[in-house]
View 1 (cartoon, rainbow, N blue to C red):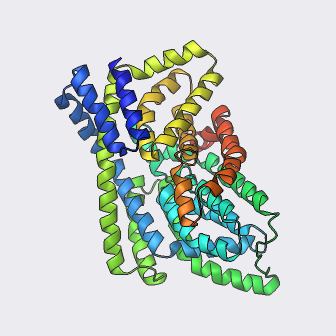
View 2 (view 1 turned 180 degrees about the horizontal axis):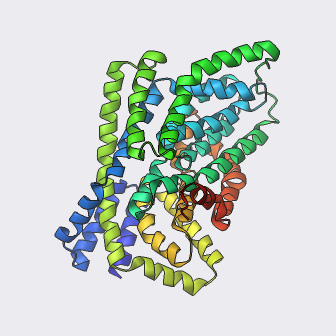
View 3 (view 1 turned 60 degrees about the vertical axis):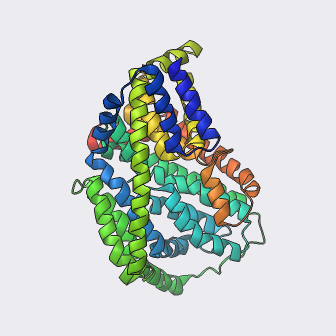
Length: 433
C-alpha cells in the first residue's frame, strides 16, 4: 500500500505541474518515511549510477545541439535537402521532416531539433502561405524522430539504466526511425497537397539545377560531414558515444564560427553556460529517479505489475498492447528523460520475462515516448511547435492527431509486433539480439 501511495504522490504532483525532479523527490521522501528505507542505503545507488562514463555523452550532445542551433548549421542542411523536393506543393513539410531526422542524428535531442529547424522553417512556411496549423503539427511531430535516429540521448539512457550495449540500442531504433520519417513525410504531403494557396517555388531543370545543386552541396558539406563523422566513428568502432559527442562539439565550434559565421565567441560562452544549467538539472533528476527506481525494485514492483497484467490476459500480444498504452501515458506526463529512466528499470525485467528481446524493448520505448510527447493533453512538443509558429494550439491538434494516427501508430505497431524491424541491424552488425 505504501508504494502505491508513492505512485499516487508522483502522478498527482506531475499532473498539477510540480517540476519533475521535485515530484520524484516527494515520492522518495514518502518512501523513506513510511517504508523504513535509509538515505544512507539509497543515495550510494544514485552516486554509483552517475559515475558512468557513458553519461558524459548527454551534456556534450546538448552542447553540440546548442552550437548547431545558433551556428546556422541547420540552414545549410535545410537548403541542401530542399534542393531535392523543391517545386512540389508541401515540399517544405518534407524538408522539415528529413532535416529533423538528420539534425536529431547529431544532437539526439527532440526539443533542440524543434527549436532549430522550427525557427528556420516556420517563417519560410508562413511566407509561402502554408496553413500554419499543419506546419506546426509537422514540425512538432517530426522533432521526436531524434529519439530514434542515432546517436540518441534517450537510447544512451536506456542502455545505461538497463545495462545494455549502447551501440545495439542505437541500431535497434534505426529502422523504426526511418519508417517514421517516411510516413510523416507522406502524411504531411497529403495534408497539404490540396491547399492551392501555397506558393510553389519555380522548378529549376537541366544545367541550372546541376549548378545550383553544386553550390548547395558545397555549402552543406561541412554540415553533412558532421553526422557522417559521428555515426561512422561509432559504428566503425573508432569512437565510443561519449568520444563521438566530444568530437561533435570540437567540430561544431569552428564550423559555426568561421565557416557559417552564425555564432560569436560570446554566444559560444552563453551556450556553455546554458549547457551547464541543463546538465545540472538533468543530473539532479537522474539521481532522484535512480533512487526511486531502487525503491521500486526493492518493493518488487516489476513482478507485481507483471502479475497484474497476467490477471487481465496471458496473451503476450495483449500484454504488449497494455504496456504500450502505459508508455504513451508516461510520455504524456513526463519528459523523455524522466520517462525513460522510470520505465526502463520497471518494464525491462517484465519484457524479458515475457520473452521480449531487451533491444526490441528499447525501440518500443523510443517510439512510445516520442508519441507521448505529442499526445494531448500534455503534448509539450505540440505546444512548443505552436509557439514557434505563433498560432493557437487548438489549430495544431487536428493535423497532429492525423499524423499520429497514420504515421506514429503504424510505426509503433510494426515495431512492437514485428521484432525484425528493430533487431535485424543489431543481429547483422553486432550479432546481438
